[in-house]
Image (cartoon, rainbow, N blue to C red; front, top):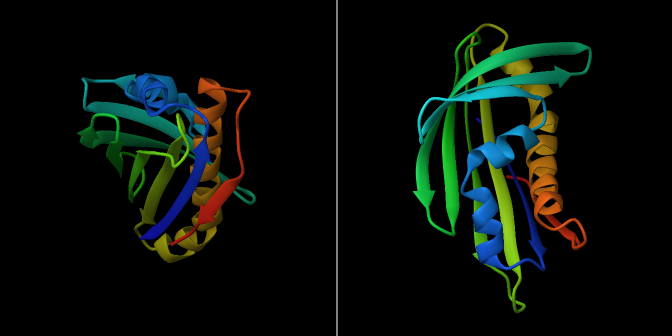
Length: 157
């Protein structure tokens, strides 16, 4: 499974970050390729995501299940393709920053395409998944506090 992580530290208090993050309706639309989502209950939703990989574009419907919800720390989820043989997972993580009233925020994402074209799709998707993680964190920070966005630390695994 292709896995990437994008992390940064911002001058935004952890509580302010969590108040926004705790409702995924706030941040689901910030995911690259987002078309829409339907909330089934507090832990289940259906997402429509359009992936563009070079000349290819594909709209995929995902069942999204929240697998972990740790107050002021982490939201993790698993994705299962409804109309495509794909699976994935993701998390948005918060930690107190070293400076007063700062926070560290990261997004970790993994994606795996199955089927006969899975290996080819996985090679094409890795750069896209990296961009998804980066853009999600940047959009979250901008939505919460558009004035403060510090330098970024990139970590790819």
